[in-house]
Length: 183
Ligand code: S3P
Image (cartoon, rainbow, N blue to C red; front, side):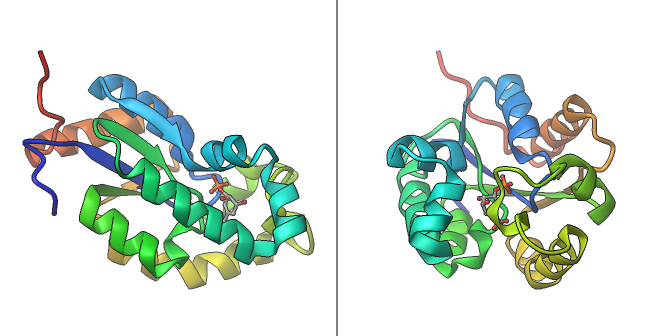
């Protein structure tokens, strides 16, 4: 892993509705780092939203954009990066994340995912078919990837972003992985 005495970069991974952005933002605040959401960055660069990208370029096009954005974001330091739920399916992204930073997996139940993703709006993979069946299928495929990549696995089912972020901060502190103090 990276030498954290010089640099700090933390990737939040986990399924849709696990709270990667909400917890990531609170965590960045606690750590005095910046926060960036890779999906928001993809949309800003493309000038279109994610459903549009899936519609026009397919999932393949979206994954290409996602990999390019992640690779750029990984050049920043003192940053918490929330990734999209499927970022781990690209081997290059997994290599990048494990090489460039600390990876935190927010683990959440399918029930919580269903609640938090609501009608599935803005998430093309949930736009058709039975949302629960889709979430279960994706979890089956991706859970081994999340687990293998994670430096830290944190339960996010409590739904309290501040509590989850504090827990991550404590774990980082216990492992001497907090961001270096800057003057
Ligand atoms: C996806 C998750 C989404 C977004 C895109 C694809 C996925 O991000 O990247 O819709 O493959 O699970 P969130 O996990 O932030 O919803």
